[in-house]
Length: 180
Image (cartoon, rainbow, N blue to C red; front, side, top):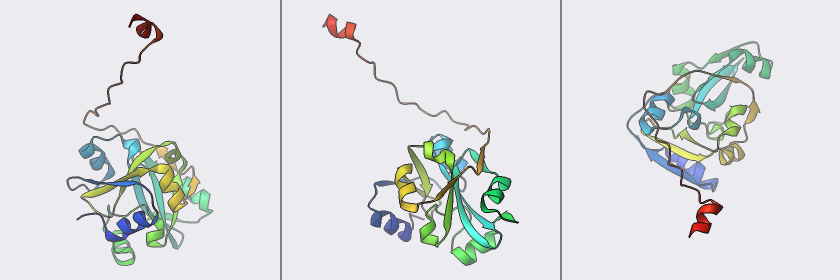
């Protein structure tokens, strides 16, 4: 199941740089991070939420959980709930776990947790279980224009695999340059 055509068209029309990342079939952001050996703070989780009678998308880093109380307070809502799988399939023609973070594609308002603004680049769902898109978070924020709010809380979850850190290049000091 490759990147969905509407997502690809949306990203190309936005004229931003993005990279399609193929991977084995995954159903959760945790599995995506494990598979691609990527830190959880560089993977974006998208939740379809029903606030009173209106659907919205909530976007936050994979190692965060949505705080229902904070979201309820932010919207001054009476009721906040995760959308039912049936509603995702009938109203939005998508499977649970494949919802994209691109609200305008679904004609949905988007709320992003403020912690996301500290991330430089991240992986987003591309409407597929086998492909994701990597793009700059500032490009995402500029393109989607979500409301930014404190709606999440960090969750202490660790990946089971070691993430390879790029080796730092030795810096040349003034003393080393003088020796040459």
